[in-house]
Length: 116
Length: 113
Picture (tube, each protein chain N blue to C red):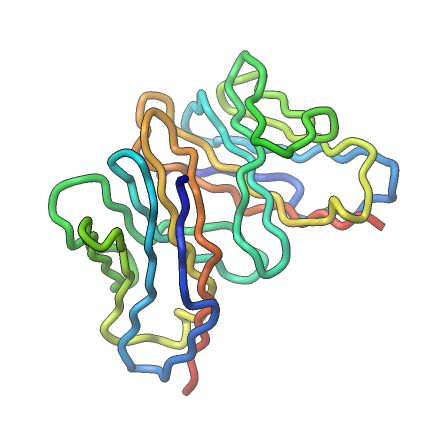
């Protein structure tokens, strides 16, 4: 199988602080990972494409300085929500492509972020 | 523009009844089509996918979907629904070199005894 692990699964932080979410491919290498955001009772919206060893590609309307993405290795991508505000509260999910096999994206369990 | 439409926001079926969840897509190239299921507070589980070949695709948990190019549809079906199927279902489209996906708005399935 192909397992993607996200950590933490839930996090509560104070306004103005930063939060880091990790996305790890446990048993495969992932050149490309994706970060999605899901608002309550809504669909998943792609935020950015994370490429190992290079800068992330952000979707239109996503603030790159607010949502920092780092993909320093073939098994780890991180999303840091900087200076978090209550409107950043959401469900964040990552997915990973197996290097050399672009036939399915494997999703993490998601992270519920609540900013108070 | 690339998009996925799931016309039904919420569907309720009786346990044992058949199910069909609708999905229509707009995509400029040959689409790769997916159905995912999400339980509350959880990530996504892939039910099935279509890339090419046979237009009727079998998936896990007894689900199947049929790709109809002429109708730009990829409807999900199950002949007999179980209470454990209650969840949210997402249709998604992608293609090309990576698995960047465009999701529909989801259909919330409730199963009544």
